Length: 358
Image (cartoon, rainbow, N blue to C red; front, side, top):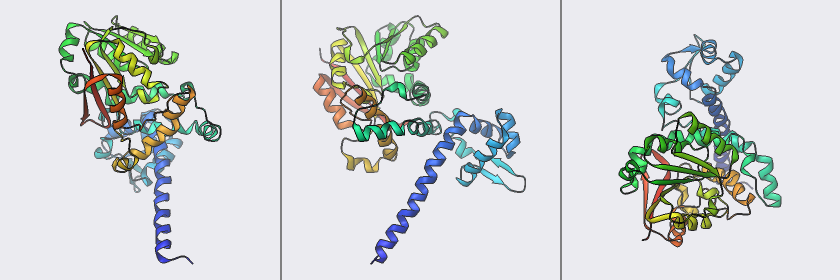
């Protein structure tokens, strides 16, 4: 016989499930609103507007915009005036949903939901048979990562991130050699190359598509001090060639991260620095209960990071490998004077700074 406590628990959890289902649906609609520019249009109007007015300004079909607005209104994101059949995005909400609000634009991160959902069948097959999924199967991955880098990394590079490395800004201004491993489409490396023309920048990534995009941006910006190669970071084959090596949210996806770190140590010049940005999780699951984005990041880890690594018969660190394991692997590789930083603009990541011993 069902007890009152059991009945109450079931009712409460069912109510929570309703919230989860609504939240998942809203995440997809947030992605649509971001990609279609609807939040930017609504934020720019500073008042109520009809669905037709919003659609016209965004260059979209009104019937679809109206249905999207229905989700936004019932999801308590957009305000609705029934007398005028008009809609408004309050400024406080626009401040975390628009491109003009970076680095606080959370709508950009909602793109992960549709990106990962597209590989659900292939992930389920991995659950049943093992193996992994190649990065090439994740459509728009590089575009989404580039946008997220533009939100969290690029705007903070010169004033917050690079100054974490002792003496790096002055050295970059004088001219040093920098390698960015897992560079993706080169957004960060190209930004550094533009900011520090006396320095020389190299980007490595396994993706032909990403490197093609990186080279195209470098050409478009006239950056002669940035070069990009399709290359596995686990096979750097460089000896004391770089003063600074960076890795922005990429090591946990790699098949052979220990080899990558060994190569980093070998490729650094004496007293050179390694700067790594990675997820601010813990290596102890119970500690992640207090991390607000932990469920989403474990989902990213399950549906992407683990799959991509195992596609190369890799170590499958996972996105939530955690600061403790990261610290241990860096130290075991021979990176010393290790410091771990958090930055106010980026609650998702930690920044590890380590030096090659002399």
